[in-house]
Amino acid sequence: MPMSDIRQKAWSAALIVLFFVAWELFCLMTGMSDLVLPRPSQIFVTLFEKFPILWPHIIQTLLTTMIGFVLGVALGVALGAVIGVSKTAYDTCYPLLVGFSSIPKVAVVPIFVLWFGSGTVPAVLTSLSICFFPIVVNIATGLATTEPELEDVLKALGASKFDILWNVGLPRTMPFFFASLKVAVSYAFVGAVLSETVASNRGIGNVMMTASSNFNVPLVFAGLFVLAGLGVALYVLFSLIEGRVTGWATRKDNVIAT
Amino acid sequence: MRMQPNSEFAGEPMAAGSAPTAIELSEASVTFGRGARAVPALSTTTLRIADGEFVALVGPSGCGKSTILRLVSGLARPTTGVVIVGGREVAARAMRVGMAFQNPTMLPWMTIEKNIMLPLKIVEPFRSQFRKLRKTEFRDKANALLEQVGLKGFGGRYPWQLSGGMLQRANLCRALIHEPRMLLLDEPFGALDQFTREELWGILQELWITHKPTVLLVTHDLREAGFLASRICVMSARPGRILDDSRVDFARPRTVAMTFEPDFVALNQKLRAFIVDARTAAREGA
Image: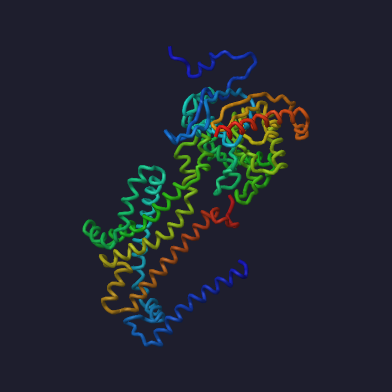
């Protein structure tokens, strides 16, 4: 890594630390009650102390999020492929999808609870239903905007529609797909936590709910920090995979040629 | 009794010594769009190309030269008439042709080597062996072709790491790798500098002399047509039709020096006159 890159990264890190320092100082100087806004140091201490209790909840939230996310991705890719390839499917499904995605998911959770009881299942479903939409849109857009010239290369060889989708459409859509994955993974978190907050006795959402009714505000914030941390971790993970798979789109020189 | 699938061809009287027909357009025309907004692209055209011929299509821009290529490759359907390639009517699915477009159209997510191997992934009989041979025999085949066009060692690069001329060479490799009996070339050297172009003419001529595929070359460059083709068809302005169809009998292998000799220049001037007339006629008609 060149020196300028390191300096750039160091600056970013310093500014992030500065943000927390400013928060800490703001609370100390204004004498803010920790019932309103706890200091970051308090939050980190709480996080550290309560970690053994928080751990199973973290696992629970992560699990429901990931199941919902994986199912959402599968559904999103399938729907996106159909919509991207077929004009009829596009005209039929798009209004329905836009309609569905406009419904606030908090309104849907009670229905899921009614059908499946409270707990893991509604959390998975909420997370799925909130995260599949950006994937559908991006896959469909990627496929619909594939250059006909690229398709012609295969058509002239007598390739079937599936051959063309597999060798041109889908690889060409990968950059769109990964862009949507990064959005979808944070959406999946929102969905899972939302459902846990409303209807579950496990998960970070539930911990925060319980903590706030006990006025344990530092624990509520600790929950928020956990969520933010998990979100960032998954975002970074998908960015790394993205760099590997779709390096061609950003023209990175370190793409590995096999 | 039902006729055998190819009997209409087998039964057709053929001049003694002439090769079987590879490509036949009979009364084919193409119109894009319908009703008041219909745009005729190709007037009723009849063209017969024998197996192993090297035919160049020249004419003013937008005259339907590329449309003929698209008809033959199966990328477009005739509005009227029939297109027969290799004894079969061209259906929705094209057949084993090698095609090179004006833009190199390399898939940007694949290395050059993989791009070149693409036809082997699609076309039988290579397709069924692709998984087994892609790391060995097929790869060697791709690299042998790359070496032939002067791109040795570039197989592992991505398309954007290569210059336009290099991409066009790779494009030619991709059109050839599945050993097609028929090559359809749509201005493949159009965007190249003079010297690269002349070098690639030589390579293409050599390939044609060794393997004798049927070649249909669309070009704007009259010298290119004269250098490569054994027959040149001149087309009128849109909607195109064939104005002149003449044989080119210069000895092979032809050299770039030959393109400056009087016979060759005379041929060029004859072709040029046709195209100038066609352009004038089109302007006056419009």
